[in-house]
Image 1 (cartoon, rainbow, N blue to C red):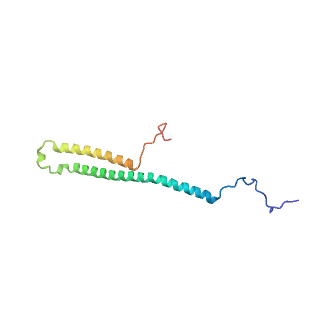
Image 2 (tube, helix red, strand yellow):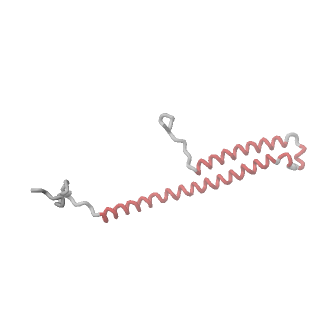
Image 3 (tube, rainbow, N blue to C red):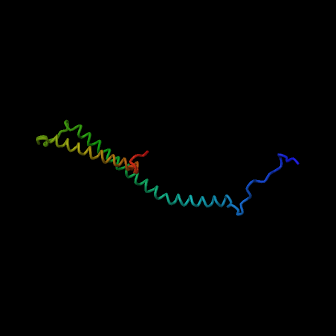
Length: 130
């Protein structure tokens, strides 16, 4: 006898002995786990946002102070010091203090920028990322 191509054949693997969970019950299990995960992560996300906003405010304040120190130093020769102009070397001392302030504020601005971006130095066992 010849077998026809239209004859149905059995699948090679028999059906599993235990019934698999229905798709709706596994979906419900997944959904509750996902919701629990979102609830657990929300506080971390909120704390990270607050930390980022604080770093932004600090960075803005440091940038403003840096610009002010630079402008004061740049305009020092034209600044009227009043009675202080008679003190010897007052402009040089003020200029050196403003230079130190600029360095300080630029370092603070850089640290605020790193904190904003959560920049961390990677730790590699061999010292190389490759």
